[in-house]
Length: 300
Image 1 (spheres, rainbow, N blue to C red):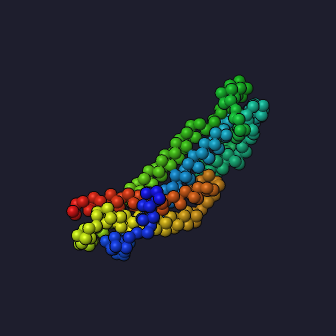
Image 2: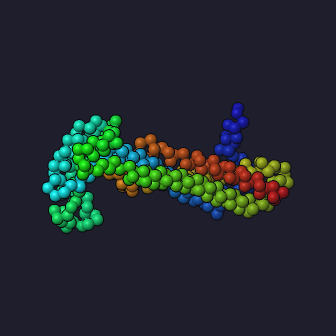
Image 3: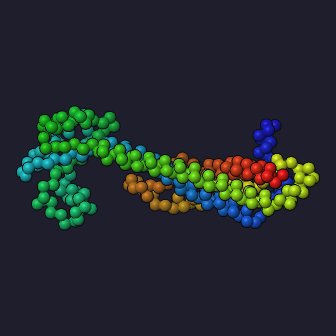
């Protein structure tokens, strides 16, 4: 049988004599399970943040890349003629799927958050806006600007480039922060389990001394600590992951593009948190083994 398979089976089965060196209950057991559960709960939300911000960045980039706004600032009495001329140019431009002039009421709704609901648009020189939507292939923005400059001098094309780049960059940075948070959570789990293992070793120093007198080697004793703390961390992480998934599922969900309403998983993304308990067990295995061997060497 493969030595690694044998080691894994031995880790799961344990050794009754070696397990006597590790307290089955008590402060260290509760601390390990609670820490793993709490960190797994937070890891689910950090993972949800990373996945949601990545999805949000792609959505913002795709939506803003396909939309543009044509702004027409014309003297009084010439606005409607300029709008009709601009619409004719847009309708004959390859790559433009649709073009629609916003009504005064729609423009009032857009300006309401800044100027309030009682803004007298009819007395103010408000530019007319045309909403432009590109098809899958897109249009030549440079060529369109040249045509507009020749046929509709009052028109200014805004393809949302200056708005899209900062939004996508902010979403990508949030995604990076989510992955950094996952790394910090893993480090915190390793640190807490290391402290718990060292505490358990110190508390059972007399039992370990007796086991050494009867011929037990440090690797044999350390194996018991590694098994107990690995299983505790895995169990706690499993509980925390389940609670985290339930909490994420209870969050509001929507397709309006809002950040808070889109925080969560979708499709196959719901399976990603299932990797948290095995990863927590691996972290506990490595941290406990290193701490146990190091502490046993100092107690020799």
